[in-house]
Image (spheres, rainbow, N blue to C red):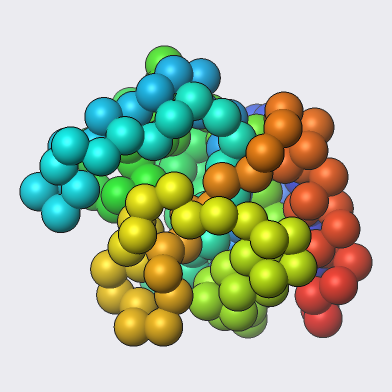
Length: 156
């Protein structure tokens, strides 16, 4: 079962607690200078992005997405640089219980010809993907429409 939702307190409570993969639609409202040594000097431009991640620990997809949406988190993952207020905000999520983040990322990149803004971003533990962050041209409605289309093409 796939679960696509705009982010609200109500929908965060409905996210599946199962292990799997997810895609975050993120609205970044200002340029972000990346700090980690691996990306020092790189900038992620203001715009719309999709981030593909996995959640296999306790609480599954629900716990991971709730963490990404929290404003008071201690930075841990690359994506935290884009999901911490006031820089950016998660606006929607596609949850895929039992899914694979690399498969989702490849599908999105190939189907929509999305670009990788920073090589290796979000995929430091992945040998096959150039990154797990994809830039989406257009405004917030475009990034949500991409998730709606992909929801109807991913088995689940």
